[in-house]
Length: 216
Image 1 (cartoon, rainbow, N blue to C red):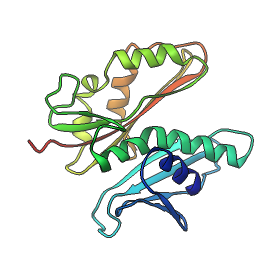
Image 2: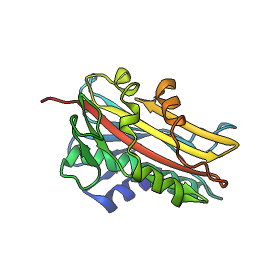
Image 3: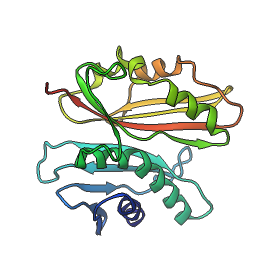
C-alpha cells in the first residue's frame, strides 16, 4: 500500500520515497499507512495519516481513510490509494506547496467560505454508477456556507482535516462529515438536509478539506 501511495503522489508532484512502512516527502512530512482492517463491515478499509512534523510530538497528524475494491489485494490497494491521493493527498500537497495547483484556497471572508478560517478545498471525487447528477450538484452548490453553523465549533487552532462523503440511493443514504477523524453528527445532519440528488444507482462523492484559523 505504501508503494502504491508513493507512486500516485509522484505522478502529481515531488519526490516521495518508501522508507520501510512509511512514505517520506522532500521535507519533514511523513505518511503512515495502517494495514487494511479486514473486518466484516469494512473489509477493504485503510487509514492514512500525514505527520507534518514527526519530530515534534505536538505537531498535527492529518488522518483520513479510504476504501478500495477489486478482485485481488493489489486491486484493492490501487483503488484505495487512488481515492486517498485524489482527495486527501492532493489537499495535503497544496498545504505544502501553497500555489493553487492541487486544491482551491477559500479565504475567511469569501462568500463561499467559512468565517474565521482559511480553507483548502480539495478536488471533488465522484464514484459509483450515476456520477454526473451528483457531481454537477456539488459543483453548483458550495457546501461550506451550509456548514457555517456547525463546523467551526469542531475546529481547533491547528490544521484541521475535514472529510465529507455522501450519496447512496434513495433507500439507503450514506452521509458522513468527519473532523480530525471523528464523525460530527450536527455537521453530518446539515449535509443530509441539503437537496443533493438522490439517484437510483449507488453513487457517492468524497471531498477533503483542510481548515486553519485565519491569521488576518
